[in-house]
Amino acid sequence: MQILIFSMLAVAAYFLGCIASSVIIAKYFGCIDPRTSGSKNPGATNMLRVNNKYVALMTLIADLLKGMLPVLFAKMLGLDSLEILVIGMFAFVGHIYPVFYAFHGGKGVATALGVLIGYSLQMALILVLIWLIIYFFSKIVSLASITTFIIFPFATLLFFNWPEAIVALLMALISIVAHKANIRQLMVGTEQKTEIFNE
Image (cartoon, rainbow, N blue to C red; front, side):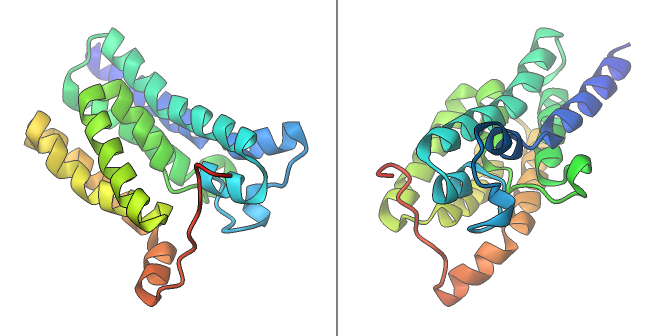
């Protein structure tokens, strides 16, 4: 029975992750579709660049909830820590590779944070602090995100065990692949800076 529950939650988490919050919000409020402007990434940062802080904040919250809700539901049903994190990973993968949008989605940062908040608030706070420190000195969202994802598996190993750390490593690798264009721009010094707190 637990295998069935796990499988159903994993599938549901993936499809929830596939919902493009920014596209729906942009259409509802008559804003610019983030897939057509700026970095063309359907995430909160690009929503801030091409629209305004209000729709960007709504996108951030919606993407957070996509990762957090499946994890909290899995916890409520009594699944173990590895199963819970895997379910969260499915929501994360759905955001990056959404079946509804020809598998072209966002970078997964907000959804991963939602997974972490639901999974381990203490670990989430530590990683958010690391993200904020890197962003404070660089003003580059992608650099802060990539670096934090690299640290994520090590933090998971400190709080949990090897199986959970391997899942975290998979999530980090998936996100790094999703950030490959940003990595190229960082290497040549052309990555865009974004003042996310002053817009």
